[in-house]
Each structure stands twice: as structure tokens, then as C-alpha cells.
Length: 505
Image (cartoon, rainbow, N blue to C red; front, top):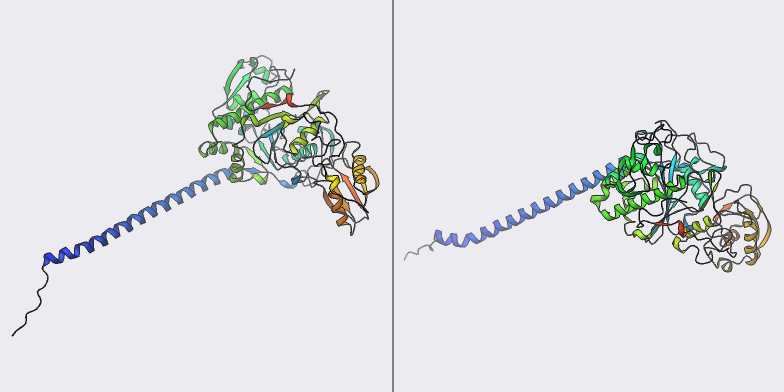
């Protein structure tokens, strides 16, 4: 009997069993292809995004110029002595690099500072204070570095804006201005930036103009008093929006507008900057708005190396976005006329610096008996004398400032804390900003105890025997303060009416 082979499956049956397997494989291939495509697209977008950000950073970084930090003084206020951050903003009227077309004058003129604001941002980033320092203010300009590397001698009773011109270079000397501000205020300046005519005009164009108020009709002769005729009408009385050259003309006009004084011009400049802040805030600090603004600013800006990259500048700007307009204040350092120049009024100015150092709103000045006043008034750190015991330590005290009576006040505090005061006298120089505790061999531990009575003091080892305290402007005595003079009438908020408080008198 013959056996037969098992019947082979029919073609139709084979297809029915094989098709699902091939379909599943094809589906898996399609899924893998879609995943690969999605991954490729995502990676492509990431690369393009990174290239775009990199291009923006490269463009802005290429715009930024930095100044040499070697010109900063070695005798600076301690950075830890102020709770917040201090930024010095210098408006330069140098005529180089295309600025002469905007401001008149010769392109080879020496760099000069036309406007200076010291911006204080408290640690909580909830409010800000911009203090104007008039260019004609009589100050002491400390030693400053010249282009050849040598240093000048200190100059007393000099005009403040002369500091920027030390060295007679076309781009000015921002480090010398910073040194002068630090000595004047006793505050550590964290950053300095200089903006020229082009930068100012470009910024006002980018934001679409700034709303200003003109108190009376203004003619070409008001901008240039050397003209023989009145010239064309530049501004008609009333509120209007200005940008570019017109914005620059508005902030530079002195004669024929308001009270015709440079101090009145400062008030209008404060109103203008307040209007600029208001416009930027209303537009929103989004990347789309911020990047064109950053591009315009950085093209005509010189900064210290701490702000020398686009990332640092943008990060700093974004850190200010939550400050309310009403909490953005503008004030001029307390002043009076001294002939044709400006003298700083004390102790009002020192109260202002002390308030900034301690992150106190300037609206509080004049309400607490002068609690925050600087030399000769209440200490910024009460109780320090009680926390230090100087038993068995002998100290000589020297006044390193132009403020009389500080050595005697410090000697009284030292004696109260148990120290032995070997004597008091004036130091060789009266331009010290920071208090220095000098000590001889083997006395570092005792010197640190002495320094505990003087917050922010710097230790210095010397070859001589004994311990010396050289008082700087950072020193504030623990003595009763005189009744303060309020400065609140001199304050503008960024949300104030643009037509209010535009001149003195």
C-alpha cells in the first residue's frame, strides 16, 4: 500500500496567514520612519535655535566695548558694605565715531561727560533710585590713571565732569569718573556704562519715541546760543513725542527753556528718562522687544568688563523688569549754588548715600530723626560697639577724610568698648574712602577685633609696631544725629506727569 504525501497548503491559505505578519512589519517600519523624521526635525530646530541664539549673542557681543579696569582705585569701598547694586550711567558728549553729526562740535574733541546718574537697585529688586550728579559740582577728583599708565595727583575743588576728561582722550576716562563717585558717596560701584549721542538717539528711535512736555516754544538759538538769529522753531509748547535727533535736542537744550539753568535741564532729563522707562515697560521686556533695544544700545556703549557680554547685559536688564514705575525714583544730590558752580549740601547728601547703602527708600528720609545719616550721625549697624570687647588692645586713630571730628568720635567708641586709645590725629591724606586697620607683626588677631567695630574696614599689614585705624568715608559714628532735612520734594517717580516739576524756580 502506497502512502501519499501531505497535501500542500493552497496559495489562498498561505496568503491569508502571511499577510498579517508582513503588515505588522511594514507598520513598524513606518512608525520608525516617522520617529526618525520627528527626531530629525526636532534636532534641526534645536540646531537652528542654537545657531540663532549664538548669532544674536555674537552680534551683540561684537557691538560691546569695554574699558580698562586697571584705572580703578585700589582704595575702594568694600563691595559688601552696600546691600544692593550700584550702576554708574554716564552720558558722554564725545564727538568721535560719528557723534559730531548729532551734537555739533569737532570730531577730535576730548571726551566729556554731559549727564551722570548713579542707579541704586536694592537687593530685593523691588525698587530703584537714580541720583543725578550735576556736571558742575565741586568735588575732589582722586588720583586717576593716564593713558601712559602713570597716575595723576588728587585734585580738590574741581568740577565733577573734569574726571571724565582726565587723560584728554576722545573716548573719555570712565574709570576716573567711577573713582570720583566712589570717593564722593562712599558706595561701591558695581558696574559702569557709558552711552554716547548715537546710542541715545538710536534707543529713542527703537522704542518709537518718548512723550515729553515742553514748557514754552523753543527755537534753534536756544540750542545754540552762538547763533545770530532766532532760527527755526524746534519745539512747540506742550506735550509731544520725540525720537532720534529731536530727542537728543530736547535733553541738551538749556537756554530759553524753563529757568534756563543746567539744574533745570537735569530735571527735564530726569523726566525724559522716566518717560523712556515708562515706554519700555509699556511695550514689555519680551525678547522680541528687548533684542532690537539691546542691539541699538550696545552699538554705542562702553561698559566695564563685568557687563562685557550680551548675556550679562540682557540678564541685568531682565532682572529689573518687575520694578514698578512708581517705585522707580529720580533725585538730584542735595546741592546749592557756589558762584557759578554747584556745592554739595551736607549732611543731607550723606543721609542720601547712607539710605542707599542700607537699601532704604528715599521717601523715608527725614522721617526718623536721621537714623541713616553718614559721618557724625547714627550708625548703619547699631549695636556694633556692644558686640566688640577691646580689653588690652591699644589703638591710634587717624582721620582720613575731610569731615572734622571723626577721629574723636571713633576714639570715644573705642574707649566705650574697652580699647585703649593711644592718640588721635589727621592722616596724611584726607581722601580715604574705606576705613583701614593697620597692624604690626603678631597683631593680626587684635586688628581683626578692632575691625569688628568698623564694618567694611580693610586690614593692612605694616612693618611698624602697634595698631592704627585710618578712618575713611565708610565710617559712620555712633553719635546722635541732627534733625534731617527731607529731600522728598526733590524726587520724581517714573509714573509722574511729564509736565510736572520740570525746572527750579
